[in-house]
Amino acid sequence: MSYLREALQARVGEFVALRRDIHQHPELAFEEHRTAALVAGKLEGWGYAVTRGIGGTGVVGTLVRGSGTRRLGLRADMDALPIAEASGQPWASTRPGLMHACGHDGHTAMLLAAARELAEQADFDGTLHLIFQPAEEGGGGALRMMEDGLFERFPCDAVFAMHNMPGVPQGHLVLREGAAMASSDYATITLTGVGGHGAMPQHTADPVVAAASLVMALQTVVSRNVDPLQAAVVTVGAVHAGQANNVIPASATLELSVRALDREVRTLLERRIHALAEAQAASYGVRAEVNWRRGYAVLCNTPAETAFAREVALELNGAARVTLQGPPLTGSEDFAFMLERVPGSYLFVGNGDAPGNCMVHNPGYDFNDDNIAVGSAYWVLLARRFLTAEGSEAAT
Ligand SMILES: [Zn+2]
Ligand SMILES: [Zn+2]
Image 1 (cartoon, rainbow, N blue to C red):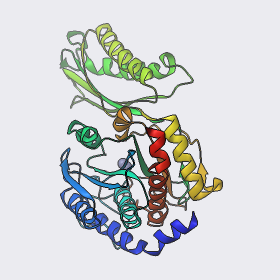
Image 2: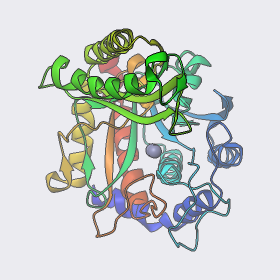
Image 3: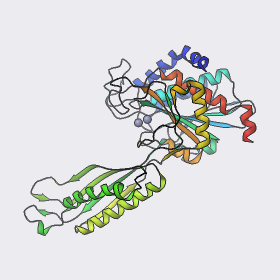
């Protein structure tokens, strides 16, 4: 498949420039107006039927070729982060305090490069939906698009998505069947007692001591309740209480991040955290209130679609540059919601493993433009293999 990569490499300059333009103009979740307009304009120019404003700033570009009945969805994300850039690149963010620190500028550019190739070559048979979503970074843009009828308006037999991965050799593809990224839930636990003089604790119900004990007790959820062969994370990332050394405050607040790679473990974590908060609070004579907010779901790559994606990756890259079953990650991704509705698979492309190669969400991070050719070639090949006349028959 080197000819495909070479074809895309030959005119990659246009998409490197596009990527850097998006990078210079980062936009936060649901504010991707400039980026969405740029995407929509390009797609229309190449002959796609474009639908704007799905789930806020989401864009879908649709292209139909031949008489095939198969329908494929490919997803990229468009949003940036509230981080002040320190990459030192000439194309660094022009907007203070905002940057593309997760490479979504690159994901958008890779899918656009594929979009142009697929439109111009027209060598597929079926329906192609290119999904450009807003607000992957915590805003649940995928879910918003789905609530806005994404899969009713643009039905897909399978959906695929790609994310860059720093620390992995540039262009190396990493796939995984099954749970690949964790669910992400949030809890605020408020402990309410009776405040008073720090010299006379006997007249108070001290929520600080209860909070300290609860932080320690919460560690036992993972160590004692979760199956040791399963993964889970309970992090107390913030503790807020009191203002003076001689005043016992009336309340204390804990902020939790809770992750799991299995739906049942996720439910167990929620149940045990509620139980511990209430029982610990009662034992100290204070009251606990747990505000639980469900975030992203566990991202589960379905077997048949992952097997298909592996074949595409191997054909494109060769076995030496493909990891067929990478490790699961405790990070989260809202493509998980799409995979709850439609089968599909999510993979990583290595962003490079040079010393100092920044992890995503680091102020020094930058997307590796060498991935635009390989990433777009992967999308083109995957679309061609999925939307074939042969595939159409298999689907009917
Ligand atoms: Zn991110
Ligand atoms: Zn990301």
